[in-house]
Image (cartoon, rainbow, N blue to C red; front, side, top):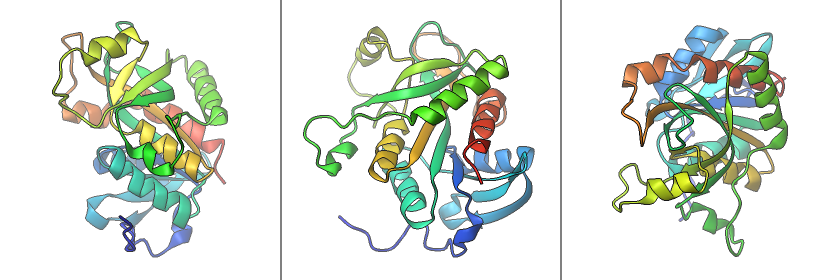
Length: 242
């Protein structure tokens, strides 16, 4: 069903949104990024409390805005940013649950591709499965930034799920067996939307808990402690910003 009223209808000053946008799920994390890292910050959106800010980082204009939870939510906001507001590149900065035994809480995962149980990609009308992949230039830059910062960032497949509480047993074991590093809820939607709009996208994740280890961060820790992920994303964004 087509909705003719933009979710972002109250964003009236298009020029206030930068060409590159960082997007956490939680709008309060967007505010935390703007407060900690950016200067000359302007609030460009507060519709539905999905806060969006534009500021300056290392001399470049960068925006940061929440995208909510799940593929449909990130699909709405990214589609509008790409198609209505001139955004060229989006970097998701989010949390994920670890699957591979080599990843631990607070580790960084850079998603080269996303498997998924979401049917969202079917709407694009391509027979079979539409591959959800990162933009290589952004992926390469993020990996190089992580190396420069001496962050042991893992690069690989992630799993985007429509379910936070999956009702059937055994899925996590299968995902781990097939080499997925972690599970989250938005990356595939971002990559599909970028592909459809001929734009760039990357997902950089921090591990907040683990499906096979007894470790989990609090909501406050997730909001405030993902420094490596945020700085890798910001320094990657600078390379593609005006």
